[in-house]
Image 1 (cartoon, helix red, strand yellow):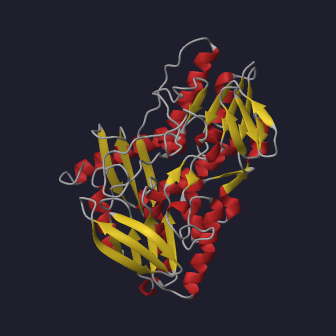
Image 2 (cartoon, rainbow, N blue to C red):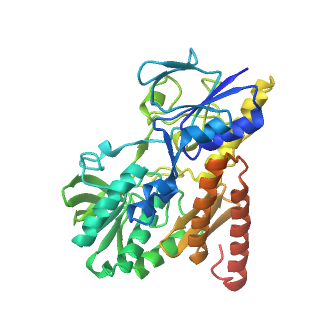
Image 3 (cartoon, rainbow, N blue to C red):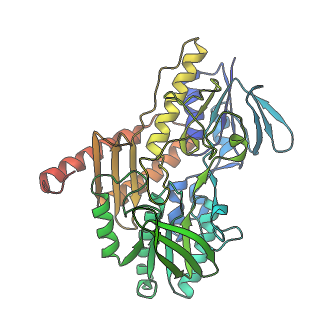
Length: 433
């Protein structure tokens, strides 16, 4: 009997546990270790931040659902990994041995890289966790009581830009519903070289569509933005030119600010010699396996992916949910092969597919593969995306409750995107990408 330990219980870790149990059978022991005792559906956090969702609607207790599948759970942080001894040390001193380790921790939020940033001792809000989103909602309510300027965006080195766009548009919709939008100027501040870059050098007509959306909703923007520091009610931003030189400096007043940080690897993982790159992200081969430690796999935001190209302000590459589940599935198949005495052969399909809600409409894109040149390079928008995102939330939460490991929804998303792309070509042949 082998012991498979999954470190992290988010969008990658929990599906990994369910799929491992389904594929590997009951003869192997599976343990999930997470720093907290609940699963949070992170894509819903922008809705939590404006009060459209309550915390209890997007959070699930982990232990009961894993126990139904015969999966062990430990709700404590891991403070150290002894890769040579195949052992984890938990907060409190206990140790857990493993035969195979799947790292799906997500990132460490690097607010400390910009002075005054972040919700813990800083002056900006975040939607990276459900706790942060709850505090962002409290600040949103204060904004509604005393309207004023808003700054939304992403710090230097950020890689997950989609939620910043989502929050901007959802905030715009929430303010309009309260008839406060005319009292709240919004500025989007991003490390991206242009609007719609998304850390992917754009997808289809993402630049044109997102610029149109921002203009249509009266959102101003600053790109190539290097946020240098934040004070109470003031953000200081250097705007760089294409050569990386400062040609304009901004001092932006705000009453409410939500800025996504750069990511790093979590401390316990980053400290393992030879496992990670200098930012603490796990180095993996084409089979999602560590080249240094063949019994360690990794999936999701915690893995190292090089940027698509140089930018004046550093921009990372996003890892979308579709891509993460593909990585997870490949890992489980590869562990099954190793248990059978074979070499791993399965690879994740690194395809970026995303649904972004804009409050009452939305945008979707498909980049296949994620890094250009692509076989599919499509970006579209419409109310159908808003409805699809609502359906996705309900589907995924149900999937985590039932322990279903089959990515049925993702297959339908691909078909829907294919249909919409065909429809765009037929109805708007000059605009299709």
